[in-house]
Length: 142
Image (spheres, rainbow, N blue to C red):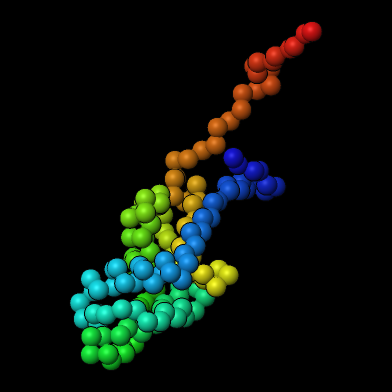
């Protein structure tokens, strides 16, 4: 759908999707995917703290086998890759060629996806309606 605006500009609606994750889902994602990074300490996650509202990172406290606590910071980019993998494993459909980012909404980590028809589908054009004269009409008689 295209909405004409004075001056010849057209506005194409954009869709913004947010996928919210609970604290347990975030912790599970870190426990499952973070150990695949070289040098990441092995052990249960004791605490997770989200830092920042836009492009947040997390600080994770891990209890290693020696009962020593280690604090590790996971960047927003690494965290984004974890959350995309969570969605794929859970079969949550994600568009492939659309940028994704993390943010915090109502104290929950969220994966934000913006679909802008004009930017990501350059050949997209709204369907035009046929002229009024060629439209079919239906009349009901009792």
